[in-house]
Amino acid sequence: MPTRVVTLVDLDDRVDPPEVRDAPVIDGPAPAGWTPAALPGIHREPEDESDRMSFTALHHAVLDDGRRITLLDDRGWSVSGPPDLWQRTTAHDIADDARMVVGPDGPHGDRTHADMAADHWAGLAEILREHGAIVSGADLSRLPHEVELSQRLRERLGRT
Image (cartoon, rainbow, N blue to C red):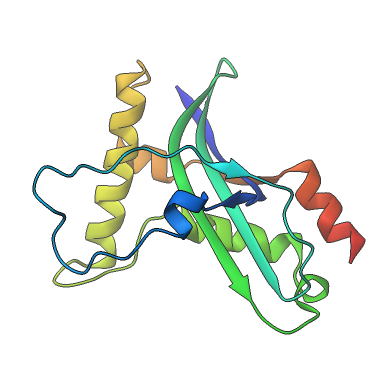
Protein backbone atom coordinates (compact mmCIF):
# COMPACT_ATOMS: atom_id res chain seq x y z
CA MET A 1 0.00 0.00 0.00
CA PRO A 2 1.42 3.46 -0.86
CA THR A 3 2.28 5.67 2.09
CA ARG A 4 3.47 8.79 0.24
CA VAL A 5 4.42 10.16 -3.15
CA VAL A 6 7.87 11.56 -3.83
CA THR A 7 9.11 13.70 -6.69
CA LEU A 8 12.85 13.55 -7.33
CA VAL A 9 14.22 16.69 -9.00
CA ASP A 10 17.58 16.94 -10.74
CA LEU A 11 19.34 19.36 -13.05
CA ASP A 12 18.44 18.61 -16.65
CA ASP A 13 21.64 17.67 -18.48
CA ARG A 14 20.04 16.47 -21.69
CA VAL A 15 20.92 18.06 -24.98
CA ASP A 16 19.47 17.34 -28.39
CA PRO A 17 21.72 15.05 -30.41
CA PRO A 18 22.98 16.63 -33.65
CA GLU A 19 20.60 14.40 -35.66
CA VAL A 20 17.69 16.18 -34.00
CA ARG A 21 19.17 19.63 -33.53
CA ASP A 22 20.39 19.94 -37.13
CA ALA A 23 17.56 18.07 -38.88
CA PRO A 24 15.46 20.00 -41.39
CA VAL A 25 12.00 20.91 -40.22
CA ILE A 26 9.24 19.12 -42.09
CA ASP A 27 6.23 21.34 -42.45
CA GLY A 28 3.24 19.05 -42.80
CA PRO A 29 2.71 15.32 -42.50
CA ALA A 30 5.66 12.96 -42.58
CA PRO A 31 6.46 11.40 -45.97
CA ALA A 32 4.76 8.06 -46.70
CA GLY A 33 6.66 5.16 -45.19
CA TRP A 34 8.66 7.38 -42.84
CA THR A 35 8.73 6.51 -39.16
CA PRO A 36 10.66 8.39 -36.51
CA ALA A 37 13.66 6.63 -35.04
CA ALA A 38 14.42 6.63 -31.36
CA LEU A 39 17.55 8.65 -30.80
CA PRO A 40 19.65 8.14 -27.71
CA GLY A 41 19.78 11.04 -25.30
CA ILE A 42 23.06 12.82 -24.95
CA HIS A 43 24.00 14.02 -21.50
CA ARG A 44 26.46 16.65 -20.43
CA GLU A 45 27.20 18.59 -17.32
CA PRO A 46 24.59 21.33 -16.99
CA GLU A 47 25.86 24.72 -18.04
CA ASP A 48 26.49 27.08 -15.18
CA GLU A 49 24.23 29.86 -16.42
CA SER A 50 23.06 32.40 -13.91
CA ASP A 51 19.87 33.31 -15.80
CA ARG A 52 18.50 29.88 -16.78
CA MET A 53 17.56 26.72 -14.92
CA SER A 54 16.37 23.38 -16.33
CA PHE A 55 15.10 20.47 -14.26
CA THR A 56 13.87 16.92 -14.67
CA ALA A 57 11.35 15.31 -12.34
CA LEU A 58 10.74 11.65 -11.54
CA HIS A 59 7.50 10.94 -9.65
CA HIS A 60 7.24 7.85 -7.40
CA ALA A 61 4.84 6.23 -5.01
CA VAL A 62 6.56 4.85 -1.92
CA LEU A 63 5.01 1.64 -0.63
CA ASP A 64 4.80 0.61 3.01
CA ASP A 65 7.62 -1.92 2.42
CA GLY A 66 9.91 0.89 1.15
CA ARG A 67 9.72 0.02 -2.56
CA ARG A 68 9.27 2.87 -5.00
CA ILE A 69 7.08 2.57 -8.06
CA THR A 70 7.60 5.08 -10.84
CA LEU A 71 4.42 6.94 -11.68
CA LEU A 72 5.80 9.57 -14.08
CA ASP A 73 9.22 9.70 -15.71
CA ASP A 74 8.69 12.26 -18.45
CA ARG A 75 8.40 15.57 -16.61
CA GLY A 76 10.62 18.61 -16.45
CA TRP A 77 10.67 22.37 -16.80
CA SER A 78 12.91 25.34 -17.46
CA VAL A 79 12.97 28.84 -16.03
CA SER A 80 14.65 31.95 -17.41
CA GLY A 81 15.05 35.21 -15.59
CA PRO A 82 17.41 37.87 -14.38
CA PRO A 83 21.17 37.21 -14.15
CA ASP A 84 20.81 36.39 -10.44
CA LEU A 85 18.05 33.80 -10.96
CA TRP A 86 19.93 31.08 -9.08
CA GLN A 87 20.50 33.43 -6.15
CA ARG A 88 16.79 34.31 -6.01
CA THR A 89 15.55 30.71 -6.29
CA THR A 90 15.14 28.56 -3.20
CA ALA A 91 14.72 24.83 -2.69
CA HIS A 92 11.16 25.65 -1.62
CA ASP A 93 10.51 27.40 -4.97
CA ILE A 94 11.77 24.35 -6.87
CA ALA A 95 9.68 21.98 -4.72
CA ASP A 96 6.54 24.05 -5.41
CA ASP A 97 7.25 23.96 -9.14
CA ALA A 98 7.91 20.21 -9.04
CA ARG A 99 4.55 19.52 -7.39
CA MET A 100 2.83 21.54 -10.11
CA VAL A 101 4.76 19.86 -12.95
CA VAL A 102 3.78 16.32 -11.90
CA GLY A 103 0.12 17.31 -11.90
CA PRO A 104 -2.71 17.29 -11.97
CA ASP A 105 -3.04 19.61 -14.94
CA GLY A 106 -5.27 22.64 -14.76
CA PRO A 107 -8.73 22.77 -16.29
CA HIS A 108 -9.14 23.18 -20.03
CA GLY A 109 -12.02 22.98 -22.47
CA ASP A 110 -15.08 21.74 -20.65
CA ARG A 111 -12.98 19.89 -18.05
CA THR A 112 -12.99 21.36 -14.54
CA HIS A 113 -10.09 21.26 -12.12
CA ALA A 114 -11.91 18.51 -10.22
CA ASP A 115 -12.33 16.48 -13.44
CA MET A 116 -8.65 16.85 -14.29
CA ALA A 117 -7.57 15.93 -10.77
CA ALA A 118 -9.82 12.85 -10.64
CA ASP A 119 -8.50 11.60 -13.99
CA HIS A 120 -4.90 12.30 -13.01
CA TRP A 121 -5.05 10.41 -9.72
CA ALA A 122 -7.07 7.56 -11.23
CA GLY A 123 -4.40 7.15 -13.92
CA LEU A 124 -1.63 7.02 -11.33
CA ALA A 125 -3.64 4.55 -9.23
CA GLU A 126 -3.92 2.33 -12.33
CA ILE A 127 -0.12 2.31 -12.67
CA LEU A 128 0.11 1.17 -9.05
CA ARG A 129 -2.52 -1.55 -9.63
CA GLU A 130 -0.35 -2.91 -12.46
CA HIS A 131 2.36 -3.38 -9.82
CA GLY A 132 0.04 -5.02 -7.31
CA ALA A 133 -0.55 -1.96 -5.11
CA ILE A 134 -4.29 -1.38 -4.86
CA VAL A 135 -5.32 2.16 -3.96
CA SER A 136 -8.03 4.49 -5.21
CA GLY A 137 -7.17 7.70 -6.99
CA ALA A 138 -8.89 9.66 -4.22
CA ASP A 139 -6.81 7.95 -1.52
CA LEU A 140 -3.63 8.46 -3.53
CA SER A 141 -4.37 12.18 -3.86
CA ARG A 142 -4.48 12.54 -0.08
CA LEU A 143 -1.03 11.05 0.54
CA PRO A 144 1.83 13.32 1.59
CA HIS A 145 3.82 14.61 -1.39
CA GLU A 146 7.51 15.08 -0.69
CA VAL A 147 10.06 16.58 -3.05
CA GLU A 148 13.69 15.45 -2.94
CA LEU A 149 16.39 17.48 -4.67
CA SER A 150 19.40 15.67 -6.11
CA GLN A 151 22.80 16.16 -4.51
CA ARG A 152 24.10 18.15 -7.47
CA LEU A 153 21.02 20.39 -7.48
CA ARG A 154 21.45 21.06 -3.76
CA GLU A 155 25.11 21.84 -4.44
CA ARG A 156 24.17 24.21 -7.26
CA LEU A 157 21.74 26.02 -4.99
CA GLY A 158 24.46 26.22 -2.34
CA ARG A 159 27.03 27.74 -4.74
CA THR A 160 25.01 30.84 -5.41
